[in-house]
Image (cartoon, rainbow, N blue to C red):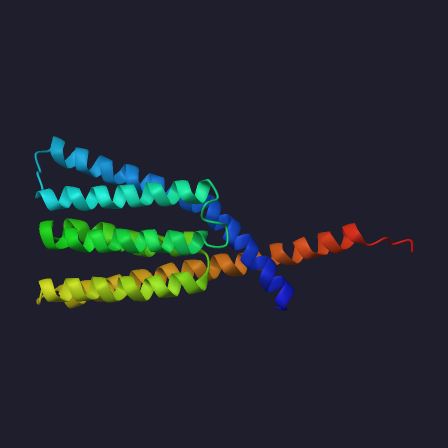
Length: 193
């Protein structure tokens, strides 16, 4: 793949991430609220710190989403901003695991599995995957000597699945970038001269 195609591909991926990331962050914030309301309706009252961590996640996600949508965070930096928001979510979810136990691990695994499909660029994905993999593994292993290692390996597997989806999406955009270049070349050339 030549450099021009790579640049076009990355521009397309950044644009996709800038459009998708705010929706996903807002949706995740809504899911957080629904979880809290559902727990309250069924009588599961968590310690106060759990709700504080949910508030931090929700606010961070919404602020990041609004900044991306308004263009304060440019399209170029949208994937990194999204990855950072997911890292904050991961840190709060790891805290929640220490407070309420394994009910938070499912959400940790889900976010780790799907975020690569929205990040869409390797550098922010790899940096955030290393952070989340290390933090989650540490928290799970130190808080549960018996099964923590197994859950940590499951978390690493979730990140590998996320990376596989990211790989597939980046490869799928290459033909679009090539077609984009061809269309631009045809539009700027006069076949008669």
